Length: 114
Length: 113
Image (cartoon, rainbow over all chains, first blue to last red; front, top):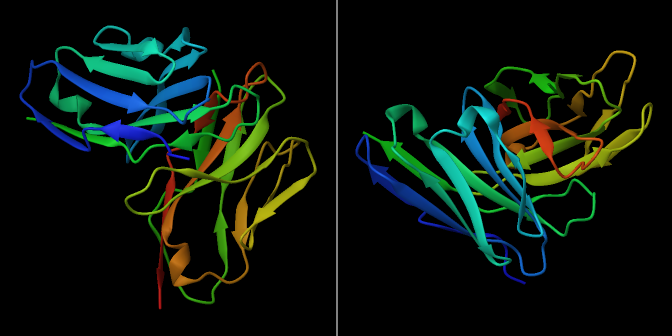
């Protein structure tokens, strides 16, 4: 089975631009998560979907970050407008929806904002 | 809110030496605790989890005991290998949906041959 697929793997943006990151979860998985990864903070939850419904939209990230699940096999994370402090790796993860705590992560999208 | 604090890295060890990565947590719930590992160029993956206090989890020679009284979940390995070089994340799972994990900042381990 294919794992979680994230595109692009690398993105460079100018301050103020809009960027869209994409994620395809493992087929059949019902839970989908977006995390931001930095060396200082580690992994911070941005959004959490269960069966395409938004369950949590990370409070600190609400104003410029918007995650959507257009269908059960595709999600996007839009950052608008980007700021240099948004430079990080954005990780997407999925799970069947059963409470196991075992998340399957993609390799991440590394964003650099100049 | 929930929080996880772990040993600040990087940690550099020689092959064959022992490892301890400290992890402490704060929550009002009775969580499930996790250790995840991230190898270079990959996403994090589950190392093991422990759902109950006073129980031990283990995998690949790593182990940790859920200490509810001390709110700790320290990761240990008796003898590390170069292939253990990675970033290790301690995490706790929300009682309502323990798929929703709160992670620590991660501890980078470098093992020298």
